[in-house]
Amino acid sequence: MYALIPIDLCYYAISKKFDRPFQLYIYLKYKCSGKIKLSNADFKNIAKDLGLKSEKTITNNLKILIQNNWVGYNKKSGYYFIRNYKRIKNSIQAKSNTCAEFNTNEIKNFKGFVAGACIGYLVNQQKRKIWLTESKNRDSKPISQNPIPDYYPVANHALAQIWKVAISTAFVLKKLAHKKGYISVKKEFQLINVSINFKKQYQKSNPEIAHKVRVKNNKLFLQEADKIMSKIRFKSSRKKPKHI
Image (cartoon, rainbow, N blue to C red; front, side, top):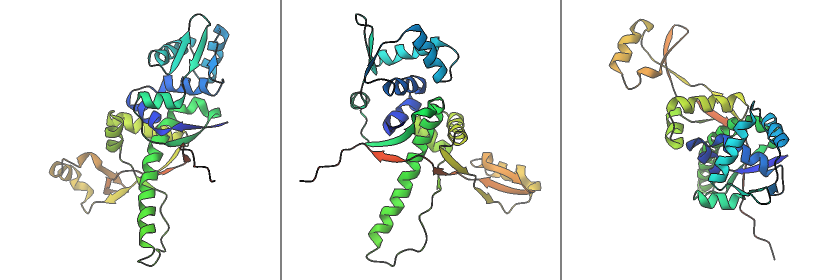
């Protein structure tokens, strides 16, 4: 089953370290019609389906969802009520109508998907910008023979700033998204016309880029921002107007 996940919720999940509760929310949302009762056996099965060893993790994340009003709970009836996207988006002041398509059978890979969706969205924004620019120029200039590229630069420090996480965390999340197949990554290197024997001197003279210096085939290179291709499809959740 394929589900459309609002991109703003993906960004929220990473920046607020909310990916585990978010994973449980998505699981429950597409396992019921909006309300559900859960037994001890259900908690055990959910943990298994999400790839978790302990039902306690499910219980804790469910409490977090209730505290944040992503899920409601009626003690009298024993029902849990799964809030809809519109209500949650309003609560976090989300504005985008863009959604990422997710195969719910891959729920165990959800964290990789969330990271991949956020990165893929940045890639698509760059791709769309080029497409719009070329579209505007079609009437005034000859149509470009160069196809719009699939890979675009997405730097770890940019992701860290957007997600409000450490650069090391951004690196790990991007690596996870690539490992789970939600993005494709191309490493980019620029040759430095300096002998490998002067690596330390070069780094000392250029402290702002010293951490980017790499040795490949006995030559010095600067590692540039990785170029990324998204493997996730994006759609708008905005309803199309009906034609009269």
